[in-house]
Image (tube, rainbow, N blue to C red; front, top):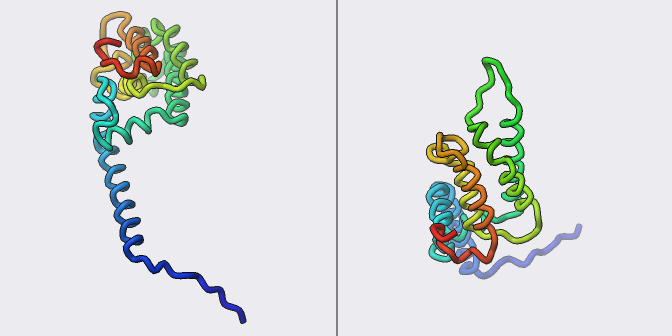
Length: 172
């Protein structure tokens, strides 16, 4: 009968360090999840991600290819929903259809930008995330001046360009 010998990890210190690093990363992920909207707002306003580990982690989430694909998919669904008028008791839409239809050209440009391979700046992705998640203030959901959604989509596209990454939102 043969036995396999595995060399034990004799360094308890290394084991403790790995455990602490795991706890730190879990704690960071929890803080980012709990502060997600506030962190996104700060990034959209032009706060540099390097100011805190939480901002850096949230910025990294916003620019992933997966997040870009999900955002493009969400905007395609939004356009489809705005174009299809469904009548019935069971159907309820929270988007402002007229604003979406007015901004259709800008939204198409946004979807194209999200789907291309060029890198995106964090600020633009954060601005875009706010448009889709802020039910209290986004012109996608709330009454606003005509053209507001289109303007904000165009500003987000412009802010996605890496050359605009260092400019505060008020200058974008």
